[in-house]
Length: 141
Image (cartoon, rainbow, N blue to C red; front, side, top):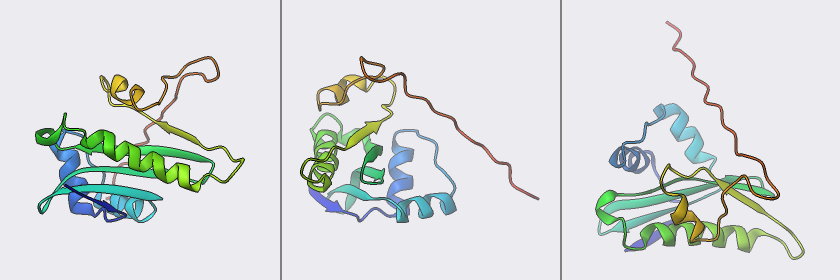
């Protein structure tokens, strides 16, 4: 397996999301988002992209998104390696005496996986529940 930094392209993104039955976004939105990704990792097995993860953020707050491992390669440590690489990026870019906050929204049923990697469920003693709103916009005819 080969890990590549900042090499995520639309086709790989689309195909990996499809492999786990996640809804895809429009191509225009996706290309824009990928071009504004702070840091990404893809994992290749021979010529096939089998996993990805992206980091978005501003240097204080980071969000891990789009962590996907093709089902044929799950359970082999690939997802853990992707998360470690994303967290290593944050660690390297947090200045001395600095502090960075990393968050994510886990896929239902995957919370325990992320807990083994050091992330904590919220709410907890310092944080309330995570919140989310999805905005849909109809095409203009």
